[in-house]
Image 1: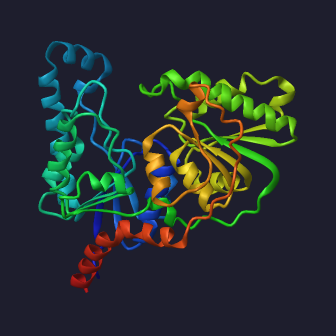
Image 2 (image 1 turned 180 degrees about the horizontal axis):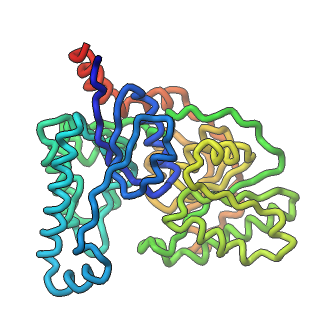
Length: 383
């Protein structure tokens, strides 16, 4: 009997639809693999019940108690970091012995923080050092936003130690074009086989995000939400049914939707459906793709709407979205949130369909091409 290979997966596990689709595609691509998902969120065992997936997590130490941590960090922060790093290292060393390959999969995982250029407890650095004699992969990511050369150079050194790093936009890979292990493929979700769903006439959707906890965007919260509210009122008066989509409750999408909804009068609220993603991938997608027109703020809302051939207007809050739209040759309209704040006239921005070239869909599969080689060679040796 051949033993199944095991892959340790590091991902964002806070029920964000985009990241969960990454995981779904990874797990379904390799049904013969046992996956160990690093996560404190055990509900992921239920999100992917038909796959060879189990969540594993380090048991929290006494020093991570909220009260004790606050005191300890105030008195001796370097010692606290050293203790937690030690606990984490011991745990990851145990996982190393149980896994053959490391896969880090995620989108915006290289953003420069507000208070620290380089986080002192850097999990990607720890993982690479511990798995240094095994195949290690970073898939589906973009780099930035960043401000300091120190930040970029730290990750240049770290990324160079991974077996394979596949970015999702040409801008990110251009920052590290001297590293032979870095490459680029269109976002992983371009390769997702979305269900064929019949569009419901006179329906319009909004993918909403909460700008409150985004330091560089908080100043635009009111103008963004007021503009969305104005569009909602306009389309209700035109006889449309409105769908407000939350892709990630943890990051505040649901909270922002509630703020906007509360400003609607009761008769108008009857025309609004709130659709919250909570791990129900298939049900959420069927509802999402049934809508005729989408105003998309979430990165992967834009990609899903493009694949679903919906009329679309992306709201741009980050350069990462523009980079991807440029890469695919997008010629449709979009609204920059900063332009709304500057009172730029965006009233003439009309939702339009944009058909993604099949070559983009095909090339998105290249994120996995090097991992395919490793898994196939492992399987051949096991036969």
